Length: 144
Image 1 (cartoon, rainbow, N blue to C red):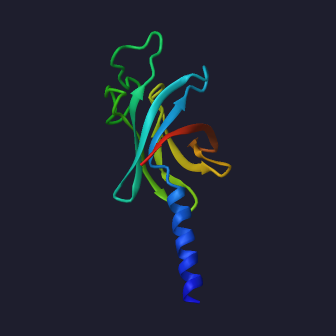
Image 2: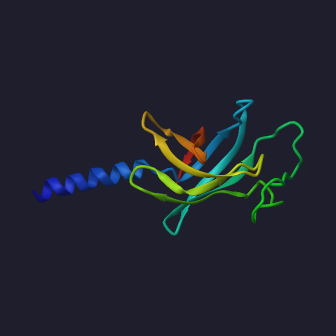
Image 3: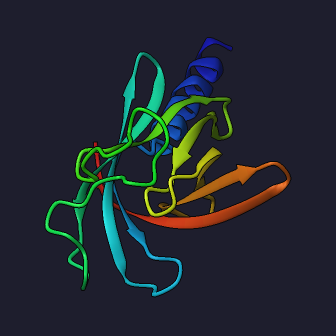
């Protein structure tokens, strides 16, 4: 019995490890479908956070763009290094309970994230305002 329980614990632990979304993820612009940014997701005090670490060049973009439309502590902060994901908690199925900001429009959404069950290198990111939501797929660049 101990062997069976130990085996199940190891398998369960490995599956959770494989479910980690900590690392670097590529984002794509919803409208143009071009590469937009690289976001680094990281854990701090058991919660998940994310910041923009790279912006792909885009015509008409300022050299050091800022979050001009943000309305909280991120207002006028540089996009590079901007914490866009905050305070997500793991519920054994998905990361949720936190927020994500869209620096393009300054809107803050409730957010949930989970790995695509068919491809663990794709992160499903869903932002909610009331009953409405928008879903993006981020592509894994690195695992941490």
